[in-house]
Length: 401
Image 1: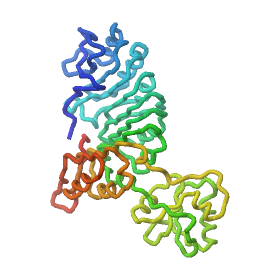
Image 2: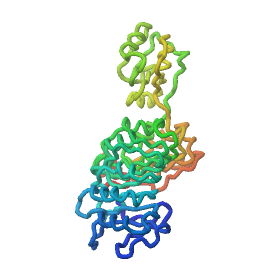
Image 3: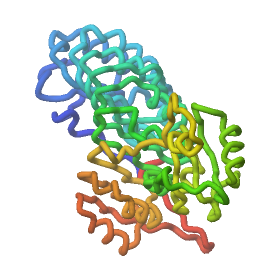
Image 4: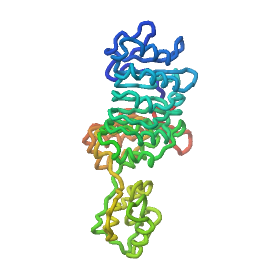
């Protein structure tokens, strides 16, 4: 599926194209879109300069940037023009950078640039949305008023995911990333997404969208709750322990030696024969394996109690974003029954007000099971995978090319 229509509404107002000849006639009633079309005689940077020079420019609260080029050039000159106009347009509260349809450019062909300076340049900004992942960066973002960040791509790079994790956005309430597929630039992993799933980064977050994702099942599974072990009742002798992640009070090798001296067996990988997983900071794939097998998980603090050692700094295995958000959006991706089962069996899913998984690959059985959850669930737009005579089923995200 591609994006076939421009925005008709943005930030609660209708969107209309800006006309150089007439200028800003209605600065508060509509949102103007600045874009280059096939018949345009003007470049977008020129339009921005003209727009910012209008007597009504200071009254504008929202702005949409459409196609900045129809030949494949990046958005750097448009960004430069927007930054040059920041004093005149300092009243901006909402920006959509990249309202581009497939007739102008497929989403995965769009060439972006570093949009971090755009976010930082407008002190009143509460909503920032962009489309296109090629060459996209969100470097050094620091904004204490931004409440909504939306990044729409057919394939989001690991570097941009890292940029978002590093961003200083304490007021953020709505975070939405279109992860896409590795065919069009997605090169991340569940490990890269762990800060989003553990929930410590954004204290005010209410909505998390990890949409349009080829790893929707893995995300659903990574949200699963690990079985916590009671450290006071742990038997060490004869039991198999696996340690993973970073420990802050002692080296992992030293912890293994101490457990071994108490009669424990030390395993290298999590399996059905593992009795306990000790999970430090950034526990990674072994934590996911422990969840899938029901292996009890111990934190570093639990380990220190078992060893009878003093605790200075403790790393925990990580919390759950489901303890704080009200809306989880995994829509537009390749979610299957496996992911639906993980969501359904997750006790924390009932903390939500809404679960959105529309555009999915679920069976009728699992559609009905999710509908039975005691929360608002969107399971519309059921898809069927494609098969080409082999045993493999091919599933596609909603927006990629």
